[in-house]
Image (tube, rainbow, N blue to C red; front, side, top):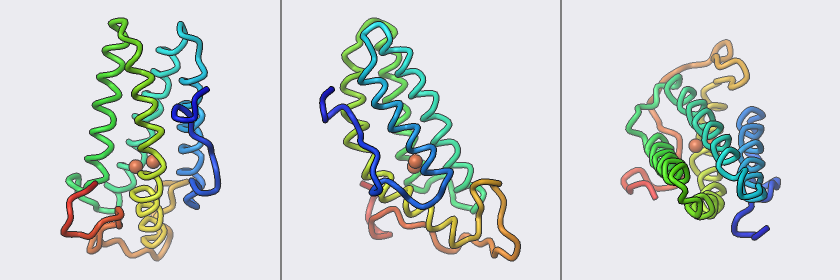
Length: 162
Ligand SMILES: [Fe+2]
Ligand SMILES: [Fe+2]
């Protein structure tokens, strides 16, 4: 198994929100399972990864929406771009162009740690600051909900998203 096609779970990927960390650990496991799969199993395992990623992103987007973050915030856009490419890779693999799955996995291995440590980490601290409980998807009692400041996604407010 090539290192460029696998992710290792480590404390560096822990963001301190149990639900986020659990989802991210499942994502890492599914990336590695796709790489490890025998060629006749690669597409179905990749499809599990894709279905999981749809849910993973939808979960974070639900939390952002609950906190009043507008849909043009860059975190939404990055999810959309990744899913579009992943869906295109599924379409090609269904046509027999299986090599795209390997390239997609390589790209996800490259992309995920940076996304987790910038946008997702920013989201987790924003949710904690706002008193939003991801386990129950409700605000803790006494939480003040306002959308005055956006969570940080790792760049200056006047700079475009990476
Ligand atoms: Fe995430
Ligand atoms: Fe995210």
